Length: 165
Image 1 (cartoon, rainbow, N blue to C red):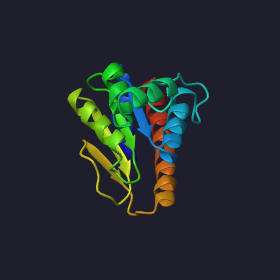
Image 2 (cartoon, one colour; image 1 turned 90 degrees about the vertical axis):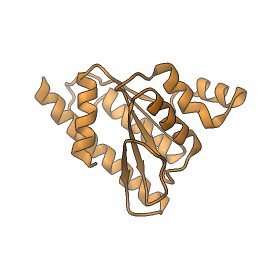
Image 3 (cartoon, rainbow, N blue to C red; image 1 turned 45 degrees about the horizontal axis):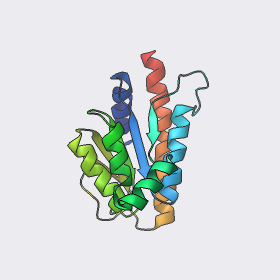
Image 4 (tube, rainbow, N blue to C red; image 1 turned 120 degrees about the horizontal axis):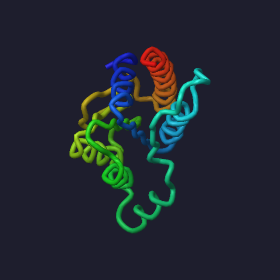
């Protein structure tokens, strides 16, 4: 899967009335927030409407309550269970591909019949529909590739949405 394919899947979801969910840990959480901000607000097209992207890292009250009362491993899966629907998309960012809370979110996304995209490095990766894998195990390089990739996806989404009217 490449930039065009990811953008096509996301645009098809938006046109179909679906949402995109994204999550990560640490620096990847920041990248997830950045991506959602670009699509809710604007990337380059200052005139387009906001797009339905939910960053699962954003609800600190839910995350800390669930982690305290139940398990940190399920903080994203629980939110997908509550908010996700069939044909929505879940994007998980994990430099290792093994983060338990991302893996469990993919399991929930699969249960809900959501589309699933993992962005990771050259690591063992959790099972999902599509994997974007950068050929490195170096965390800073994976994060740099990730934000570049996500910016390219944002640009393609804006181009495709502008053509759809």
